[in-house]
Amino acid sequence: MRSERHWSIYLPALSISILWAGILFWADSREPPLETLKLLALVVEIIAVPTLYLWAFFRARGAEVAVTSDAVTISTGGRQPELVRTDFTSVGDVRVAQSYLQKLLGAGQIRIELVDGRQFVLDDMSAPNLVAAALMQDRATADEVSAV
Image 1: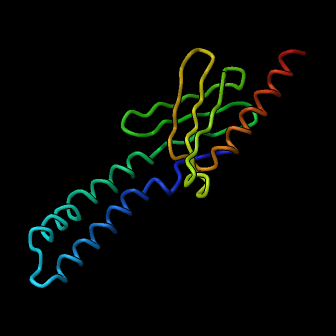
Image 2: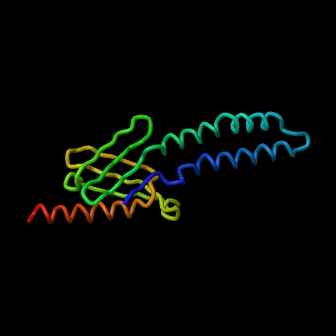
Image 3: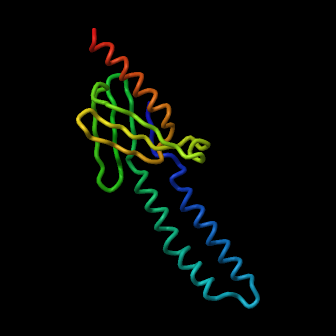
């Protein structure tokens, strides 16, 4: 099971882009045109929107959780990426948090706590419930094997 950043990470930038494009067209259609508002909308569309898309792109790069038959690999991505590969007995707790919209889109936050105290919080991940279920199932199997 593998989870990467969900495409919904780009939705805030898209919604701001659509909003300010609407404001730009509305301000231009007024008689006389609202020049100050048009200029503000252009500045937002030229500077802020590309910056938001770039920020989302760099947040999305490299972040993933991979659950294999013998280990879990966590990559945080972002500006200071961290890559951790550990066995299932080292996983202390796995939690999933989702807003209503994220549930509809299949995205969410995965919080993985290791027994050594390290904690990894990965936002906007795809299929978080499946990853958590796979981790907990494999952890329970590893606990049964170590108990025998």
